[in-house]
Image (cartoon, rainbow, N blue to C red):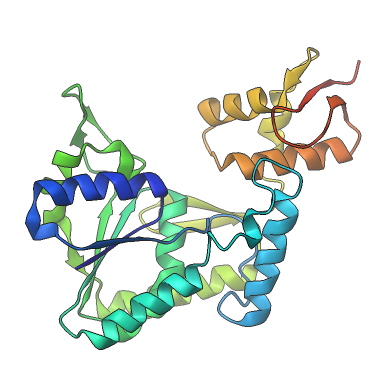
Length: 269
């Protein structure tokens, strides 16, 4: 059994669940890119792959994750090549894809599906959407992310594993192709597995509201956004959008516009 997750924090909790239940024994692999943001056009061919990598270079340039686009840390195409190789060599092997109800996991699922089609019947999905779990304090909650679920609760979750159907293998890739061809910058989860798209500046309006007449570090604005906004995204993306806004000369800025703790922003006064 191979477990696939879409967040680094999910690896730990799945491994803890495996330690509690040997029927879950298997390798845990992570799809690392965030397919909920950035270009998707021609994403399965060299031209589109390079365009996306170049976009990430621009987004991360001069920030807290500068150079990460070329570090080799994120190479989902290499990961998936290893996965496909394993599945072809061992016909007994099965895959469990774990996803919670968030745009990041669902976008990753759609991206991965193209490579899973030849293994229909051996690929299972555990989509934990709108399902109640018990947290560490014993209260019922509805998780947005897998790593919010205590390891012992995964022993219940495993009963939800179901085969990805032939019909899903036909319909879902078509849905993803349509999104890829729209070539917008932001994916949002509308419910179930339905994704909608917005332009790259989608988060800007909410970011602007957090900029006040007082100097604030970019890191503070980004953390406030993450805790208050209905639609959130990664801090690297928000830092990039702040820099784009600064480039429009609509805010005052002091310090080196680099890492999020290195500069401060306020409204022009």
